[in-house]
Every structure is written in C-alpha cells, then in structure tokens.
Image (cartoon, rainbow, N blue to C red; front, side, top):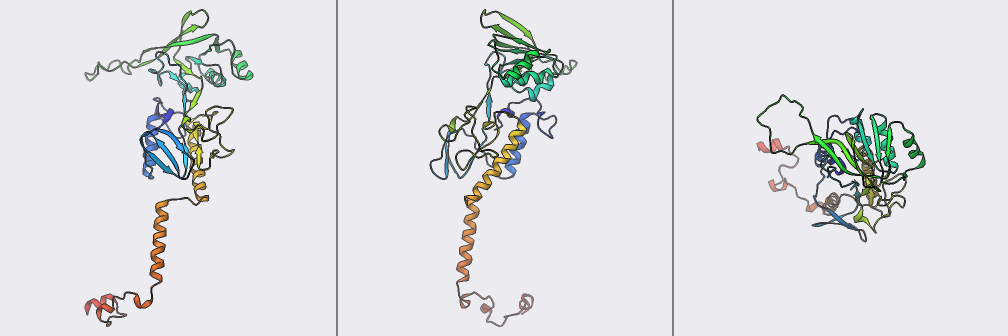
Length: 344
C-alpha cells in the first residue's frame, strides 16, 4: 500500500498540513486511520476482475473477493532508466517529480532526462530556483509541444545535450551530520549511504562518454498506470494509453459500479493531494451508486429484515396468547408496583 508516496524517503512537501513527514510515514498514518473506521486490508495482488455478473468477482493471487462496487486506485509507476546508481539513490538526488522535490536543490546544478511535455515542464520549474538545468535527450528534437520546447531552448539557465543518453548516476558518500561524533555504536557493516554527485552521459552517434557534475537527476520519461488487469473490462483514454477513461466531472468508468481515482485516471497532475481528492470523490460516487441500485450493507439489511419478521410475528398473536408475568403470581399483583410486590 502506498504506491509512489511509499517510496518517497524524503519529506512530503506538496500536501497541506504536513511538515517534516516522509512518504512512508504519511502512508502509515492513512492506513491507521482507515483501520479505525473499519477498513480491512488484504496483502494480495489483483490479477483480474470478472464484471460479467453481479456481484463482481475480484481475483487475486490467492483468493476471490465478491463485491458490488470497485474503486480502482492502483496508481501509476514512473518509468525509469534502469541504469547503474539510479535505484540506489532514489530519494537521495534521483527523483521523478520536480514539483515534489525541486525545492531541495535551490542554487544547485541539476539534470533532467526526457524530451516530452513533462520533461519541459520539470526543466522550467527547476530553472526558477536551481543554478542550472541540463536537459538530456536522446534525439535532436523534442517531442514536447512547440511552445514548451521553445521556452526551454530560450531559457538562459537551461542547457541541452542533444542525441545523448544517461548511462550512469554517480554518487558520493553522505557526510555525517556531526563529524565529531565518535560513538562506538557505529555499524561498520552498514552500507554507505550515497547522494547524487553527477552522471555519465554518452553520445548516441560517437559513443563518447562525458561526466556532468550535478546534485540531482530528475527522470521525466513518462508513467505507466497499473491498469493491466482491467484490459478488456473498462474503456481507456485513447489519447493517453493505459489511463482509465472516466465520465466528465466524476470518477465513474464505462462499467457501472467500477470507479477510478488518482493516477490511474490522471495523466496531468499526478500529485498526492490531487489523488487524495479524487479518492474522496470516488468514495462518494460509489456510495451514491450503491444507494441508487439499492445495494448497501448486507449485514445491516439482514438484521433489519430479521427484526421486521420478529415484530410481524409478535404482532399477529392474540392478546390471550401474550405472556403476563402477574398471572404466574396468581393474578393478585396486577397493577401493583414492583417495589410493593417485592414486599408482599
């Protein structure tokens, strides 16, 4: 549980009310709150949904769960370069979200990898505060819109390396916060924590490799929504492959009873706060749909029906069949208060 926020080891800065809190800590608090309100969690992978009949059958890696409504909130995974040093230094200089982490590199040199709209937007955002931004692109033209690409190419703090790919992220050991601390509790076997110090890039034509000094690498080569298990079930956005198509102004999908929220349906914003908001909208949409369909809490409905039957059975009896506790006492206590009867 947690998606991209779970892998964010640095502080979350783009969510209201949070200060000095990491992504995993936020996810943990959300989980605890959900549990307090009765939510249950199954640590399983969903491999498919049978929507051919009602209730739906959600198939996981080890079980099948029946449900009247489904909210899809599986998010989207950032696409990565899969080069040396990238995975090891995620959260320590390697990021896929300039909006989230760019502020930490104010006055520093940074690298952006990509050539689409996201890469252009990230470069422009970073150029506001960073000392310099180097854009690495494997082709000689950008795929981004002409307006964004032009702004990037004309910006004085942005430098472009055409026909170039990043082959390795370089790192240096993280300096100790207090060099004077000579505690004997230091674990000499613990892995050395590194932060980004630069990158190795290669010309795609000549193969020549060069080193670029930088303190952060922002990978902006797209996202892949985690929606493969819904292929052939719901409609997808034809303009953004993999993203679920929802009806305007709602989280409803093409299948009644299935709702989508967060990054699975958002190819634009992809922020924790916007995902949380759409998650609340999906919960409201699902609740309203269940009410419209007459589907609710089956346990509560069963209890209500049982109570109604018992009351109906009790009301059909004649007065003569009703039990009178005073009759067991010979009838002489009819109408007497219990306190007086006790004394007798």
